[in-house]
Length: 391
Image (cartoon, rainbow, N blue to C red; front, top):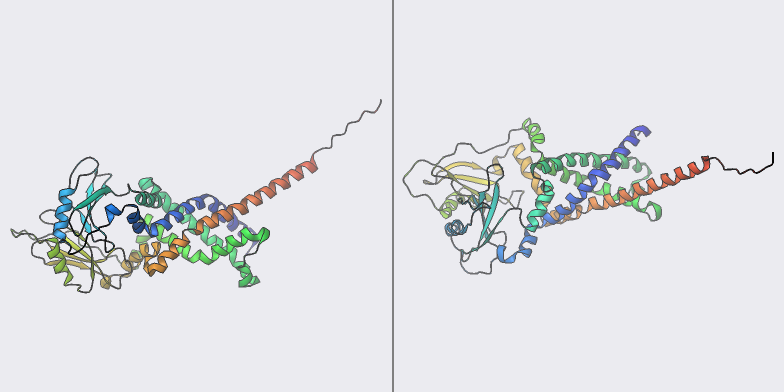
């Protein structure tokens, strides 16, 4: 690599690391916590999110009725009907029934938690108001709303450049052998060796995690490119239940009908019909789906007849659908099970290691230059000669 080009890469790597790298540390550490956010949340709020019940569980229709009856409204006291319901995450977990409130421009989502054995409402809270919700908002949007999300996306792009520049700067070291290029020595080279070795051994994983984060913050930059390869699949905008005087299906009946389309799948969540013409959306997770925390097999049903209006599942995914479905599971590691989650947890600490070692390298270099300037200034300063000769 030409010296001038290498210098430009070095300057870009150094200053992107010292500036955007600080946000990278914050995103990494909060990301590590979010890998196990639900488990931490349940540990912090067991009476809200866990059940001590046993025996037979109540029908989902009764769970929804209890949630609608127990819902206390949004922050303005306004009421609404259930928007979605999600199955218990763990065996002793509770149903989560979601409501949407707040003004049109700033919606708020309120979760009502219902015990599956007693159908008693444990309580409710607005999304993002609890400790883990705050961590999520900090990670996702720096607690600054849409502007914060844009900032995180732009910073993510800068960090991709920083990561790539680090690989470019490390690559010539291979000439001395891979063992030497990955060595970590003591003494004055310790910080440098830790920085370059930790950086290069995690670079590919960090690039993947960072890219997936950029996509989720700035999808409008990525989706147009993907659409050139294949179109993404979306449910039809106009799906309506037939006008009928029949009694609408219960949630349990809707699940039973939808289950016939995917008998081996596991129920994940349900969206009740909105209004008299709305349809049921029943979501399942099949064994081959990459995301374990969200089912992507969807069956839409007429709320009266139970007729299947539309289905969407991984078997019919386009290349773009598949690519998009992988983004979040790659970002939090769940695509590779518990090993993937722990790997992402550890990778979340890497930005802090890179920032500390990089900062120390920069600081030591800066102090060395200051000392050189001081010595040079002292050497070039005129000598003060005091002469006291007669005449």
